[in-house]
Image (tube, rainbow, N blue to C red; front, side, top):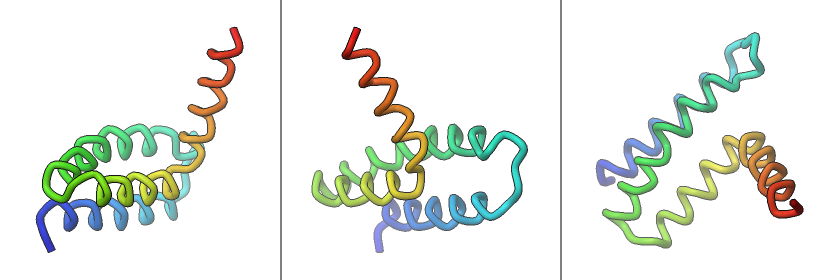
Length: 82
C-alpha cells in the first residue's frame, strides 16, 4: 500500500476513535481538524493514484464527516436562494 493510502487509513482510524470520545461541543472542533488534515490527504491521493481513487477517498471521508457536509450543503442552498 502506498504512503497516501496508508495515511488515509490512519486518518479514518483516528476519526473513528475521536468519534467514540465524549465531547462538549458535539465534536465540531475535532471535525474541523479532521477536515483540515483530510483535504491535503485527498490531494495527495489524487496526485499518486488519480481522480477515481480520490473520488473514493472523498466519499469515504464524507461518510465519516457527514454532518459538516450536510450543514455545508444547507448553507450553500441558502446562499444560492438569495
